[in-house]
Structure formats: structure tokens, C-alpha cells
Image 1 (cartoon, helix red, strand yellow):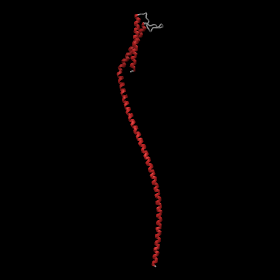
Image 2 (tube, rainbow, N blue to C red):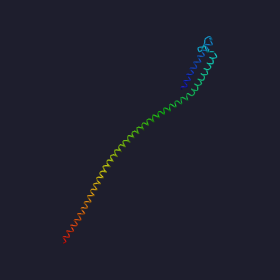
Image 3 (cartoon, rainbow, N blue to C red):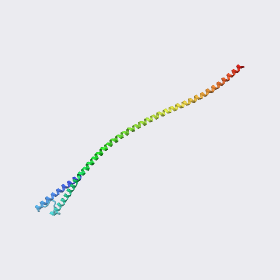
Image 4 (cartoon, helix red, strand yellow):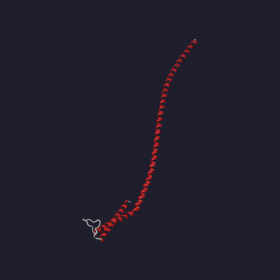
Length: 183
């Protein structure tokens, strides 16, 4: 698009210069005593020089027109490419926006999951602390019960010894009394 605008500007400039030179040539040919505007004392303007300049400008004008024709021929392709790129860019922008929305949703999900994980960790930690305290409490209770058991076993052994001793004594006393009654 820029090349086309530049080429049009070049054509307008060259066309202006050609017209200016042609009018100078006409003025010069109609009145040879009038000096052209671009003439200087060191370099006077001659008709062949002006004709060469006109020829060069016409060549430049023709080249510029050819370039414009070439650009005009390619313009539909360029326009189509531009529209495709614009559509692709639009599609890419839409896709990018969809990806951003999805990414935001995923991030929110990650944040929720992270919060859930922290809550679960806190709950697990609290449960572990509760179980540890309960286990310690049960361990203390077990130790106390073991001591009580040992005390009871010791007391039981002592009572058994006393019962055996008492039974032995009663047996002995009963035998003595029987032997004394038998006598």
C-alpha cells in the first residue's frame, strides 16, 4: 500500500516537472529572447538540454506508470493476503482470548485446589495432633493399668501365699485337733 502511494506521489511530481519543462520549452521557442526560469549564467539552458530533461522525465514517468501497473496487478493479491492475515490475526486473537480465559479458569482451579490441599493438610495435621495426644493418653493409661496389674498380681500372689499358708496352718490345726480327739 505504501509503495503504491509513493509511486503515485512520484508520478505526480514527475508529471509536474514534465509540464513545467514543456511550458518552458514552448515559451522559449515562441520567444527566444526570454530566458527559462532554471537558466543560470554559468549554465545556460539549451533546447537539446531541455529536450533531454523532458525525455528523462518521460522515461521516469513511464517507469513509474509501469511500476504502478505492476502494483495494481498485485494489489488484489496483496489485498487478499492482507485480509487473510487480518482474518488469521483476528482468529488468533480470538483463540488467544479463549486460551487466556481457559488459563484463568485453570489458575482459579489451581488456587481452589491449593486451598483445598492446605485445608486438608491443616485438617490432617490437626487429626494427627489429636491422634498423637489420644495415643499418648492411651499410652499413659496403659502404663497406669500395667502398674495396677503388676500391683494386683503382686497382691494376688501375696494373698495366694497367705491362703496357702493359712490352709496349711488350718490343715495342721485340723490334724492336731483330730489327733487330739482321737486320743
